[in-house]
Image (cartoon, rainbow, N blue to C red):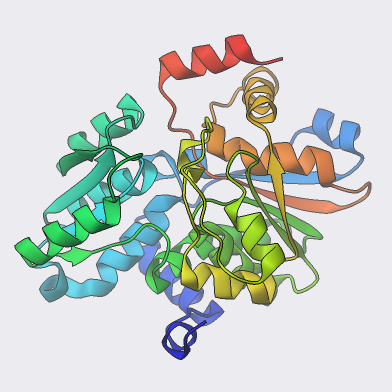
Length: 325
């Protein structure tokens, strides 16, 4: 890890600053519980429901924090982002609220609902083939050509700090936790959550959860170096990343207890349980922490779960439900 990376790594003080910056703009999302699930697991489970966040996912926290931090001068040339969906919507919405142009590089196979929402917030969408083209290179070329600011989805200190506010709110509301299960793709939410948990609930074991078809973060955690993989084939589109970010990796090494994986079948089953038992629509990626918590929470534990978002096409939701065991 380079010295520059360590020097720009965010701290909990940055999470606190982000919380003040987004207050009154981002939703303070609810925390749900399920007596039936608690009885089955023999523990207390607290679900932080980021599917009720603006834009339908936690990503709005980091996006608004990053764009607000730029100031009017920094936003004058517009912003560019690349994303499979939730970061795209978040940056588009934040840009709309702050009065600046936004261009979003999205995969052509991104869920239609996420593409439509990004358009609806006023952003220009540039499509690419996620299996043959480099989204970051496309976004950088656009940013350089237009004099815009590039806002990456996870490897950015202001993004990480903003995402950490979800766990900050969770612990403020429910108190000390023994475990915290967090979905992980590029690592922004995991890193921010780990910073907040380390400061506010020092005994809490933070566990990142990714799809078993794309276990680059687990490999990176185990090997002590960032591992890159081919594009994973998983229904968890928000976790379809080839590698985690440098900043999240450094924070993971310092503050994360373990990395777990769950199967797509586990995610389908969790989505069905969420609908039938909790009357909640969650996207596949949001099921990562939920599914892992049911598997790995020990009896008697107080466990927090980041439910990352609820942006899923109705057609895809019906298909996942029909395929759920």
